Image 1 (cartoon, one colour):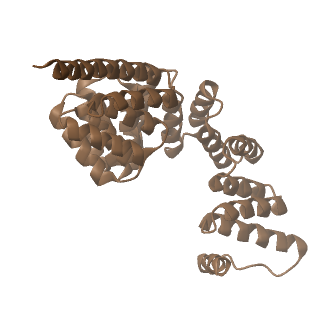
Image 2 (cartoon, rainbow, N blue to C red; image 1 turned 60 degrees about the horizontal axis):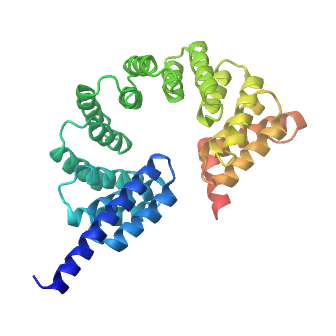
Image 3 (cartoon, rainbow, N blue to C red; image 1 turned 30 degrees about the vertical axis):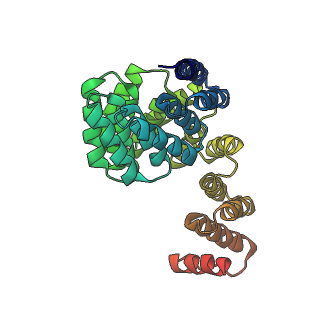
Length: 329
């Protein structure tokens, strides 16, 4: 080998070494949730060695964490061109596609990851989550069972399995899963929230309220827990307390049309019809096709008309649909 070629080879080896250093630095930053800074490191690594598959894979992970899903998929594709046998890259690509609601493509990626690493509980769990989002709940349960073979003490898998049972209307089985999840990780607010939902579906409202309170004690910014606590209080006829919960939820998620509608329904139950109409109007502003908001607005208008002695409105579903259509014209 002549001197010039030797120097070129040495330069490439130095670049590969430096690229690996930059990649490892990026991975460390990712572990601290400093994803923007991590991407800078991966870009430097790829400048030095454009064929470094781990840098492409890790950059894809960072972009996924930042919600830049299409860019993340492009990075995964680049990594897979260089190393098609990396199970983690297939898994990351599947996660991005799942977040984009491209379920069939995501399942294909999870299956490729599982062919390469069939004992990975996370792979089975995320495939199950994708199937559950796709509405294929029974298949999702099979995936969660596989995940639990390899990670029987993973509270997240028990939570996800419970959600699938819940979606199937099998509330007692769902409750058993959430009990297991909260036993394994008693500081997980979602476990208590999910348990509350199952208890509410079973009509065990006071127990459900206790679970929502535990969830909120762990995470006071859990808007869904505030919302579902409000719904449960409404079921119990405790409308003033429900409104307090909806107000808390709206502080956290002011553009949630369902919560505005729920608050309107509670106000209507308390005879505060004008306030109820205002809340329903806000829900309709956010979601012009929100049938329940239109329906509850019609109910509130009807109740107000009785108070004022004017002609009541028709409350049939057909009349509500007609009002939605007129509003959208």
